[in-house]
Image 1: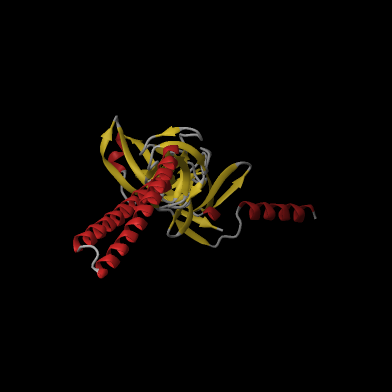
Image 2: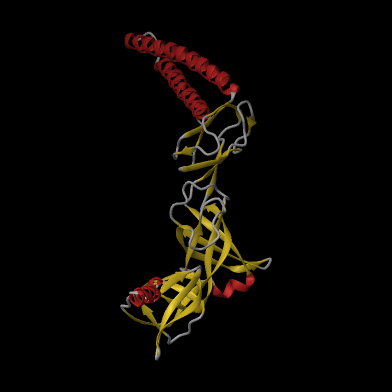
Length: 332
C-alpha cells in the first residue's frame, strides 16, 4: 500500500512539472523596433488672434480662457463714445438737408406753375430745379456718411476669425484698445505633437513611423502603458542646438491643453530578439521556465523575460537569456 501511494505521488509530481504538450515551437529571431521614450508637446496647427476692428473701450467680453468658439461669434464689444455723438450729428444733418429738399421741391413746383402761366422765365425754373438736385445730392451724401458711422459702430463687435478654443484673453472690461489690437488668441487648427530628439537619432527617424503615447499627465513607465498611437508626419531638415524636430499626428488630442507635455515612445532603430509564445512559459516559485525538446526528453530551462512583442503571428514574449535561435520549445 505504501509503495502504491508513493507511485501516485511521483506521477502527480511529474504531471505538474511537465504538463501535456501539444507541439514544438522553433525559436527564431524577430526584428523589433527600438523604442525611445521622449516627451512630446501638444501644439495647434494654427493660432489666430481676434483683433479689434476699431479703437475704443472694451465694454464687454463674452469668452474666457478655454472657451470653445465658432467662426464669426462675438468675442468682445468695443465702444467708442464719439461714434454716438457723430451719429447724432449725422442724423441732425440729414433732417436739415431734408427740410432744404422739401423747400427746394416746393420752389420748383411753384416755378413750373408760374412758367405755365407765362409769369416767369425758363431760367427761373432751371435755377429752382438746380437747387432741388443739389439738395437731393446733399441728402444722399449725408445718408452715406451716417451709414459709414453705423458700420464703424458695428465693427465694435470683435468676431472670432475661426472655430477653435480660446487660449488667452489679454484684456479686461474697461481696457482701452487701438484698432488692430489683439483681444483674444484662438487655437483653431488640429492638435499635433512636437518632438525634440537628440541629434544621434536623426538618421533613424522616418516619416510614417508609428509612435505610441503614454498615459496623460506624464505617467507611464513602459511602452505597454499607452493610450494612443500616432504617426510621424514630418521630420524637419534642420538640426538646432543638437536637436532634431519631428511632428506627430495623433487622433484624440482635442481635450489636451496646448503646450501640454506627454510621454511618447518613438522608434529610433531596430534589434533582433528571441521570443516565444506566452503559453510556452511556466512560472514556479518566482522563476520562469520553458521546456526544451532534447535527445534526452523534455528539459526545463530557466529564462529571463523581456518585453511583450506583437507581430503577425500573434503575441510573443522576449527572452533575454536562456534560449537561442533554433531551439525547439515545447508548447503545452
